[in-house]
Length: 61
Image (cartoon, rainbow, N blue to C red; front, top):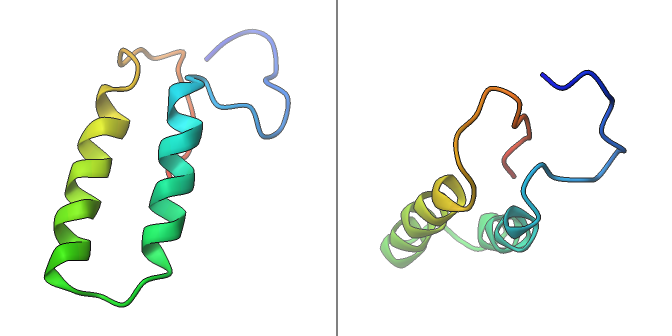
């Protein structure tokens, strides 16, 4: 982890902020096959949004 604290609400990778919002919106929809497919696609995009590094801590939606 970094030696400095990250301000609350700041994602390690800004590209993930929009993806987190899309995931949260999707979670509020009824469970369907389409939602499951969209969920998987969003999680893949979220994982690819920035390099995986030990100092890149954040939370998924």
